Length: 421
Ligand code: GLU
Image (cartoon, rainbow, N blue to C red; front, side, top):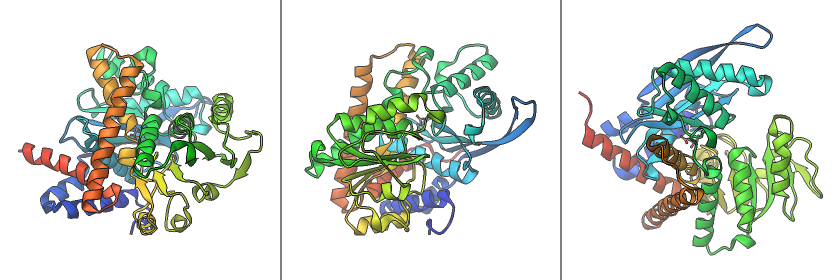
């Protein structure tokens, strides 16, 4: 179904319904979980550098707060829609639940192509969007974080904007801040580090050594580049990576550190124009179907579809992005005996360290990086084990197992709280 429609939210609903069926969840609870608690849409007028006023559209969706304050990133992208934000908010609920951190799920986004905007325009857009959603965000109700095309600088602007209105500096209103502004050590790398821990865990279960493992990574932003770097440091051979400028391939292994360095100063921070020794250009489709052991889709939703799923050669897919595999494509992968480490587990490292950052900001007591990374490892390794063991016991795939654990936790919280009034 989801492959034929453009709705990412339908895709998220299909995953929820699958898990609900296995859990024999009652219809009333399923009904509640199928509906986001709140959908908020705001106009974001921005005075552009040339004096024109452009009006962008922004959203913030809170899916469910049964287990705690809502949590989730904000993305700036030209494909942002309310449908997409609803799906991403729902996935945040399951992500926080599967790793057992005390949050519900939310997501925000502004429909904008940031490559056309100056830094000052992006700053004004961020501040105006923040004021737009200010009635519903708060350090104990809904805590934003970075996502596609937003970063620690964006979070600093959000923190400052809210603090100006409150009249006091409120570090805990966002996570993913810079270290100078009360961010957490290790937060920037956390999603990629989580992808790396998850990959090492599945390799261990399948009896494969990292130094005998080849990897392709789709996306070279915060998630893709750090995943590639850390997996490379663990001994894996990264033979293909891609970003919006296309794919880069070297069967003997790519110079990942060099590529990361290149992006620091390149236009729009992409790999466009990168010219490493023996590096070949490949298409995005070629990357997804490359002859590797592990594929890490770390870009956007709906990349592995009915069109290319049958050609995916990697035995292991570790979902660095949210929703990269459609349900229909996943059925094909499953039939072919592939392992998919689902997004809600695979990329949960970011929100786990966001939780650590929030705790540190509230306590005004900051941890050293080893403490952050070892706590992250503990959470990921334990969560992976719970998902893997359930999948084995029930003879189901890891997505279903992760969803069963997550939905069950949220459903329990919901039952204990009851429906207001
Ligand atoms: N945007 C990230 C995600 O999709 C991080 C969210 C957070 O840290 O709140 O998981």
